[in-house]
Length: 104
Image (cartoon, rainbow, N blue to C red):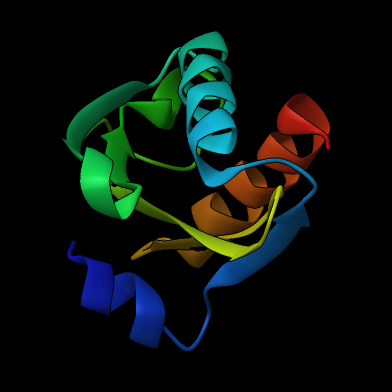
């Protein structure tokens, strides 16, 4: 799953946060770990990551189902998070969990 896949996914989920993109990425990584999932790839310069292994917190998936997460700065101390996956229900679940766990 690439950055372009996330940007162009018709079913991507979005959420806005009142924090810097870097702070948001740190909180997202902690939230993913709390969900017992794993960040498997990351582009730190473009605030992009791929995570999988959500099967412990979301039963309707397998361990290799990827979730792409892109954080984009929108203003000072504000950012937008875009979440996409081949499993639309998983993308919705991760989005809701990030809103709860990341806050802002």
